[in-house]
Length: 327
Length: 297
View (tube, rainbow over the protein chains, first blue to last red):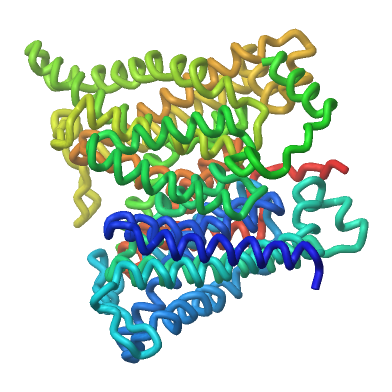
């Protein structure tokens, strides 16, 4: 095995073990908060996977809702209670639903990619809102899941947190390994200059389509996990403001570190719940100011604080400075 | 008869959309910012109209004056907010990645959502005076509120006005030059920064005007901005970002698609818009009126 892979697996395993141990000492409210941070963070991780190739999806609500609704339906219609199976169902359903869009979206970049993904998620929102069978705008409830056939009723918060940590931990490790693989590095090259990548013989569209599907799986699992933690689902899962928050976390994290995504997600959850508690009418204001400060002063995200500390090339800085001077 | 209903409803809705999208596309053309907060300025315009019409009413002026109140409200919003936002915020982010700029305006949208709630509260406002001014119009068995047709007229006036301003005036031609390339324009001695301020203010004026025109037709309450944003995005994407003809055609396509859905398959109302957008983009990836750009190596 490659040395980087070994290091990733060891570091990832260590973080998962530490988080599990920490979970034993956490109060219920913090467990729930952390579970939400992880289940949203894994969706943002998908956005980061796409961001590495320079495209940003403003419609991850689509896979988030697809995964959530799929898991909810599997649980309610087929009576499947096992949490792990439901997570798998969410991820697979999101990939299957995304498959037809992948080759189409791979043709678009920048604003157009962002807006098309947004449109797809809003189409799903429209459908969910009008579907009586799925509860319309109210959505519906799902019972508590089981784990390997055993009931988790006594310590539900901790067990769900543990499932989130382990499953998402594995996905995060896999994502990191993918990021260090040839295809993952090609993504970074596409971000720099896609025409050159094509001249070198790699397929840009295939890489972007693959990233989109990986992000779909991560988003679907995130949706299913959120559903299990909340016990409820409604069309807001697919609304554009939900998608906006995933991009928010991805930008806050930057594309240099997988761990940063979850740190960012946790910070956002904490900021959200505390501002909800202490200034309920102005929490959006707080989030907005927070976001602006991050974009202004940490343009490459939280991850740039500890990963990828290469100095920026001087000519690029000069070019930017010249542009700014013009304005 | 059904076709006529769809046509009229579609055109009325398209007129409203066009006024919103015109400001959005203009701001994108000049500043290269796809402004999510455009919907917030629209909402602020509607709220300001509620206040202005209320004050005019308190002064004892006749209902006709409420039309003036609407325009004044839009001007006030643009004059107050545009310099604040453009100079105070956006200037710090010029030249950054387009998608990052979308996120900056998303943050602005979040902030303005709460600011409007802080100023105007969460209770709905009703501005019915202007809506009644134009009576009703009969088309055989169909009866329409005259105000709807005033909206169509306003859209035509705005569209022709902006087209004329851009193509037939000196300032307009300078704006076109900046849209084409701000660096070349600036090397020719154009004060690009002034054009930015001007275009942004005008874009916000159009957003606020659309809000002002909408205020009499709905109850003005929180949540007004959210729905507008994505729909107006769909319009400018269909038309090609930065294109005024495109915004007009895009508004018509979206307006008619929605009217068709409402009258034949109501459940599809919400997503008919996005299906129309996706259908256009599949065949014209850059929108209908966008010139192809060379890729840089």
